[in-house]
Length: 186
Image (cartoon, rainbow, N blue to C red):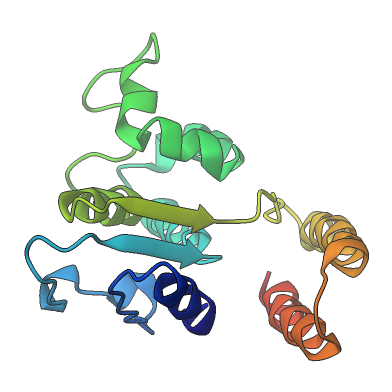
């Protein structure tokens, strides 16, 4: 990505600096990053945000406050990320007809890492933000459901990659290798 963006910026005579951040999102401290005032900021997140949803799901599963609301949370986590980003998680509960401040599984004792992270990114006021996530529901109630859901999703994804990805064979192999690691961890 760095080389492609730098080449494009050079062709257009635009000053450009690429600073990759290699960190797990849940460990990322945005306060420690130093941005120059007045510069345009672009943020790209590729196949990372779903890890925050999984973290929240684990937190909620172990929280006594959220135990009675577990079905609501599972229903939200099954929605595509696109819907989650259009409407923040808290307002999903506030819009529900049976909402009361204590009925939300995201009460003050249980924070949402996704909500917090996206709010922090908004606070940086980026000029451009690109989020690339797969829309898949790998989480099943049983191991068999999880395996079957993952298999269907990745089979379709690999078929699509094989038929549409142009470029060198090495590029295709690298992309496939990356996605195969994702498959093993899903």
